[in-house]
Length: 100
Image (cartoon, helix red, strand yellow):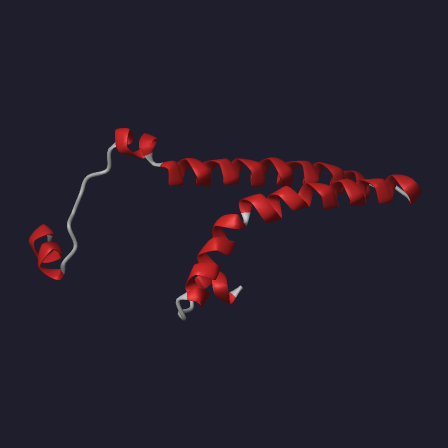
């Protein structure tokens, strides 16, 4: 199988934890995932209060808090997809992020 991969032009390599720790792209992706997870968990927590029956000004305040928490998840964590889509559009090709 390795011989066939080399014939096709793909050089095989082994995964190592040392190289993964030096990968700045992986670090950025994990940080974006952490921000999205933190914001999503808090949005669910505040939305639970709204679903439980919060009314009036309390409901409006919880909606605004959820909207503010949406911004880091949308802008910071989504930046990876936006950059990929923009790069694809600039080069005249279509990728999965540019279809959304």
